[in-house]
Length: 344
Figure (cartoon, rainbow, N blue to C red):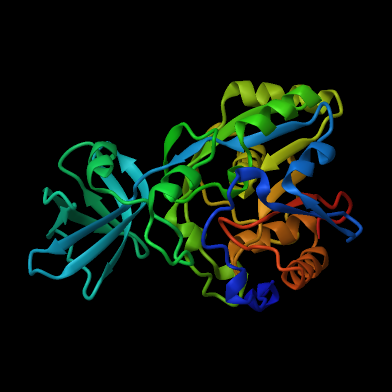
């Protein structure tokens, strides 16, 4: 597989900058296994989900993961949490004219004029490890800013604080939203339950690495970022019951899919995963996938191409652009069912 196989041209005006008035107002493109494309409104998900299906959501909660500060020399620094590695430690991405050296101090500040010191303690070749003086989550609540994706051009506001969070979010730790879940409100969840579908959750804390560009043309050389996940026993029990009764496992988002397929490969119910899914991957658990439209050359575009077929996805994206679907985090959704025979 080559990186150039997953490129496409997207008009910038199709990148959704704000959510629609209601969560369920989005459009939904159904991509059938034979390649047929059907236009829906998101509420039509009630016609695509069947009684006995199990929808698996990611219940991670986005944290205010962007921090602003200064080096001891006075230089401006921006820290973006990649993942929290301990009560007082985290891996971060750093933006600065010159990255602070290991052992040095960065002074984080907020608009109220408060400050606290962060110590640089390590570097793994991609991310920097830092130590906080007290609990990371507590300090982020006081000093952090909602980390909107780089393609959203406005500063985060009250609307983002509410809408860049799913209605099932409860476990803090993500620095990006599991965006397929953003389309659901409480009413449609209740309607799915009345339909006879079941709902379960996993937790996968989406890291900032999800936005890191793939730089290797030869995908076998790409090093995938790590993300922490956990699957409750109740979810595993619900999955087995669903499969035994002939229902489908529907992953709400690529993060739910990666957690479920990581468990299928390793047997682990929790831990870190760097599962990199490209065409040829043999899916073991997930039958259908609800997902948003993903960036060109991204690992997520590779994942959906593996799931629904490269030609199907390529055609679907061309169609979506022609029909002016809205792309990325605040954009529209796709409903895919996996290719059972070839997985390609």
